[in-house]
Length: 80
Image (tube, rainbow, N blue to C red; front, side):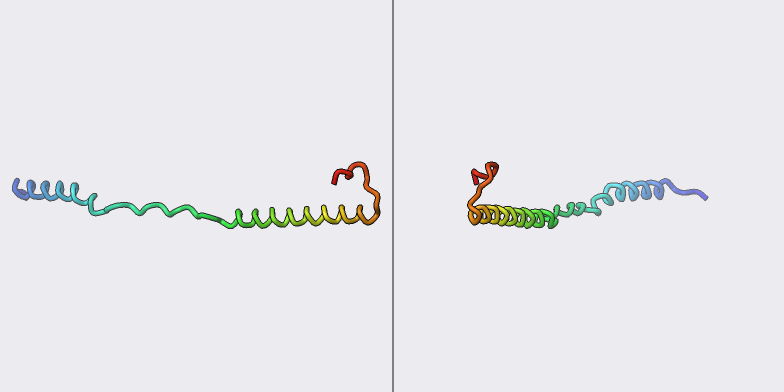
């Protein structure tokens, strides 16, 4: 079965055209998703710091109140 040179040349030209044109069909790739702005741990940490400061203030006020009621101030805590 003989194939003419015209058919081979047409097939080669068609293959070359597809090789050049097909990569352009894919277009642009999707951009990566943006990073999350907050995963919740920063909010939890902020709440924890506020609660610790409130606990510290309560303990400080309790200590000052108990020493003012008794009238005696130990030497270690005399600078409160």
